[in-house]
Length: 390
Length: 72
Image (cartoon, rainbow over all chains, first blue to last red; front, side):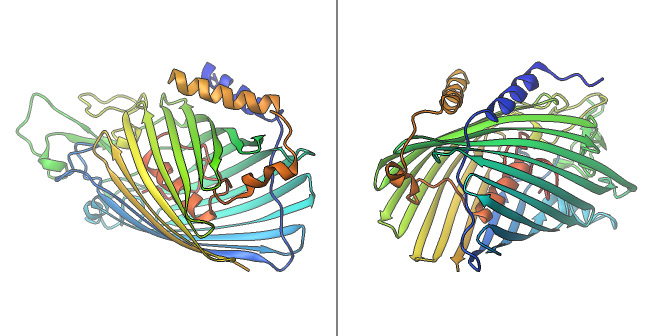
């Protein structure tokens, strides 16, 4: 029998409760019209001078370049279709190390591609529905996803609610950190989400929602390892570890089931025709013992009225460590991980985004964010995008 | 943490009460690009990916609820 902790009952109640609340806006456009967007994302994270930050035994430095294309087209006045193509080129210190093994070409795949597509329909002014499909692949990973949503809009247009469900079926090759291929394994993800929208006043509106996710199957990262340190024998250096540290590696082990729940929301106020501010937040908890909270104020400002928009954001994020996480292990527990992203840390993000409305149908984005993490895994994010409506 | 919880309760409560009905002509300011909630699809995709890959608390936004991940 599956025992569900109290905090999930609370989140489930919130998620279901939101469904009783009002609802949102969205509409298809005129037949033959649509939009095309091209984005180019850049991500890079540091890891100290010799990889000593985050996981003390692993150099986690990495750089990712990700182009994305999104095409949206109105087949008719009521029906639209969309497709999203993305590609990741990943280079990282861990890939360099794992390249020593013939079967392991990268930490999480040095090339990732995904294709998503869907259909949206608005049969009348008060409701819309949509379906989507997803396929993605890396050298050791394949994922299929399906989902759908239904949105109901209140008669006065002041509120809406959207119900979404999706499922993913993932298959991965279990290639360990030492190069051994242990065959394939699978993972299933099922998720239900509710998003609500509410006009609060002539210059204030809000979005909020909740999500509940169940994952089952192989949930470890196949190539992750945990270092078991030997305090009594510090004479044997391990050349696979940062700084030739003393210790032996064993595979990461995590529970086969994970329940995740989150509630989130944001409110935006228009202060003047040239300024608006937003406050958003999110609370997350899961059955592995990890809890995360984020708080994100934003400021939107017209630098040139109707032409050049500035968005400045600050994000505070904090998470507790998963029960299985430890920075150091001196014994071999049943469940164990040294993945620094599952450890305890705070992250402060400061970011800016400039959007240029170059004509009635064209927009350019240029954004930069810097993330300062308490465990030293600091990150730089940059993004350029061009959108054209036709 | 306590203040954040209070804020979330206020936000959720407002939705539950429906707030006051605002006529279409009063909502003009909400249609300004400074007030629209829709981030572009490419931007949403990028940030979901980053958060999914670098933070343990994933699964709260969009379709990236746990599967189809190209984690870094």
